[in-house]
Length: 95
Image 1: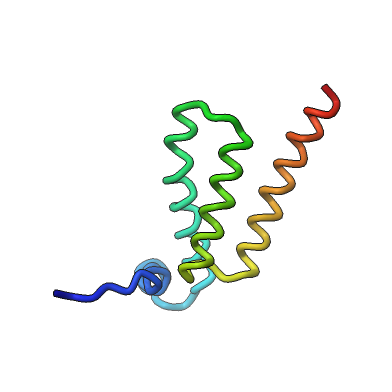
Image 2: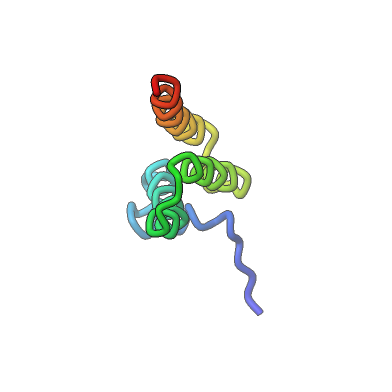
């Protein structure tokens, strides 16, 4: 039986796409693919935007926990999600 290290996937993506020269870009590409994979069923089912943003945040936290995404990139992505949620909340308040 062969062993597979799930935290090595960003390195494999980096080697495949960028020849081992750009680890942060490989992490962001992998993150975008994972977020889209999780979001597509929710988009098709027409879930609320708030639920989709919560799922996006959970996926980002999971990728940080696994080691697929570094802390700085996760912080930027979470701030983008928070800004989108703030816009939704401001629409609610305005009525």
